[in-house]
Image (cartoon, rainbow, N blue to C red; front, side, top):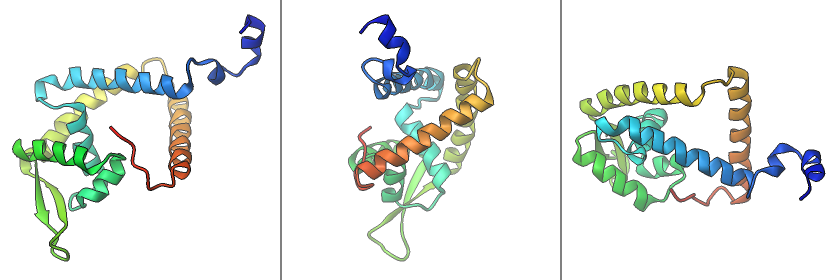
Length: 163
């Protein structure tokens, strides 16, 4: 493609191989930065995601609800929940209304861990957001939310995304 054609195209169309690939690269780099920052806490990004989403969704949610929120398959979530349970950060309790369903709760140590995670995340986020304004970040967040909505609609909202 010539320089003239490139100048005519919107920036998002010039990203190679695609904007989705660029988002994937940023996501992998962000994960690496988080894993580095969380090393002292013996917390991987997968465990972090489960802990933070459980905090967001709220204790007492079902494993299925958490898997849906995370857009991951149950086997991946189950593996991570097992690890968190072994570390005594969460516990599974049978739902009183439906004994087949497990609900998720933080232990006291798990709640403390969430507070420590939030502090580490805030530091990594501050470094990643360096040089960007709140307006830029809000606009980007709106775009991401819209794109996620569109992809979920395209997939029929039943499709779960792999980790």
